[in-house]
Amino acid sequence: MAAVSGPQPQFFGMAVTVDVVVLTIRDDELQVLLVERGVEPFRGALALPGGFIGPDEDAEPAARRELAEETALDRGGLYLEQLRTFAAPARDPRGRVVTVAYLAIAPDLPVPVGGSDARAARWQPVWSVLSGHVKLAFDHLGIVEYGVDRARSKLEYTTLATAFCPEVFTMTELRRVYEVVWGVSIDARNFHRKVTNAADFLEPTGERRVLETGRPAALYRRGPARTLFPPMLRGAFPPVPLADSGA
Amino acid sequence: MAAVSGPQPQFFGMAVTVDVVVLTIRDDELQVLLVERGVEPFRGALALPGGFIGPDEDAEPAARRELAEETALDRGGLYLEQLRTFAAPARDPRGRVVTVAYLAIAPDLPVPVGGSDARAARWQPVWSVLSGHVKLAFDHLGIVEYGVDRARSKLEYTTLATAFCPEVFTMTELRRVYEVVWGVSIDARNFHRKVTNAADFLEPTGERRVLETGRPAALYRRGPARTLFPPMLRGAFPPVPLADSGA
DNA sequence: AGCCTTTACGTCAACAAGACGATTAGCTAG
DNA sequence: CTAGCTAATCGTCTTGTTGACGTAAAGGCT
Image (tube, rainbow over all chains, first blue to last red; front, side, top):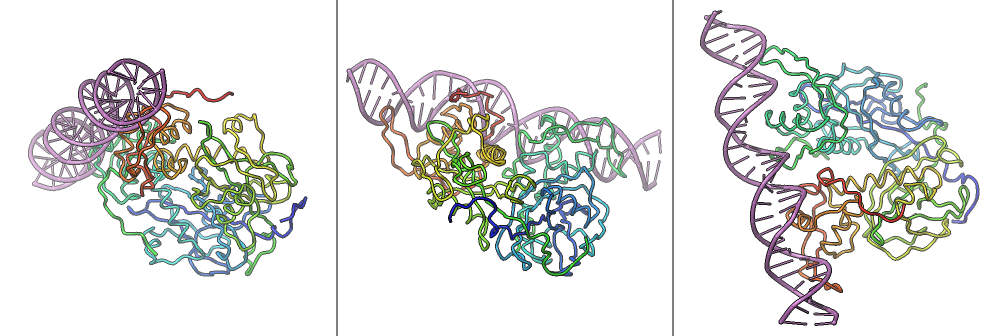
């Protein structure tokens, strides 16, 4: 390890990719966006949307670009945060490829379409991936596990739940987010009280929505708060297990 | 963006480094470990310990290796977690270098020594870095900010505070961790009650330590819990800025 | 034996949270 | 029109947690 000045060429042979775990709630299930790979390696297999970071590109713009290219998901309103980086030496057969994983949360969107490097993009229930029923390319199963864990944790002490909802939503829609992501059931009345007491979590729009049945629900918009105080504590809820913990 | 099969050489010109934010509590202050760079670029400037990931190395082993090489900090007991990856295209003058930042927490250790690529390693109060009194190379200021934020958050809902303490410690030492890292003062009696009620946070050793003065303090060891329930809530404490060193 | 210091335990009031009853506001069936 | 259905919202009660703060215990020192 001699101290040399200037670039050290022996270290500059790596590639960096981004992979995005896009979560949404569809049909009362937590679902993840997968693409069918159109190129080798793992051609035809299911994988997370993602791709190489360009030579002059930062990681987050690359994640948004890949989402747009492969899944036509591009809306500015998409919540996107970095998850963590996976750098195991043999994780990619093409060579030394390090991937920066991102977590994205989307409201229930129209079925996405395929794009350049992906033949098709589709939503898949998270349990089917975590249980091993659906196999993913590379180490993407581990990335999904990590992303789902992160989302579950962040519901507790941030206002992330609103990212699963459209711009205006009802109290019940918001409560379903917690119930579906955590796999528990929550008392609607206590939830209503708690959420309306948390400062800056929700802003009432004044409007109400008339469903097919039942009393019309007030509509809310997300408030300016990004952290939730007091937090929603999972530990307090009865331990209702969800079918998961795969592989 | 044509779909080609096999490796795509145009993407394989990058280097990946690790940088580690090592935090500890010394002299009742939160301090960060810095090295004086012994090589270009930024030779002589202060920076986080770190370096290139080897061609067949994963990121976390690289972080431990660099810590050992540059600062002789190597003990297996060191808490280490990945923070996030910084990938701005121009963040390193040597070329396209993406860095995976790690957060390490250490108990009050002997003053570390320099190593291969670092002329010297030393502890620096975090406030002196965050305030700009001490300038860091690259984008390392941003990495320190991110790491300190993470540590502050994790004290709330995990048992991370014990990572700042030696293997056995007193209740007061643990409380000082919260007070110093958060910059608040905490009622010793309520803290004692809360911490002893949290399941698996602490295990009494049965021993006690006799200080110069005052009643002997019971000694504890960290328990098996990794998450803290109920959490310690910062928002609940009065916004008491603690009289902190200088600045 | 007093005195000081620090740790440990106790009490009380305010408040948050779980359980669950009751009311409200829309619809639809008769 | 009214009864009945459903879902949303509000209220009550009880339990547990928290912040404020009083008090006792256990050392050393003079």
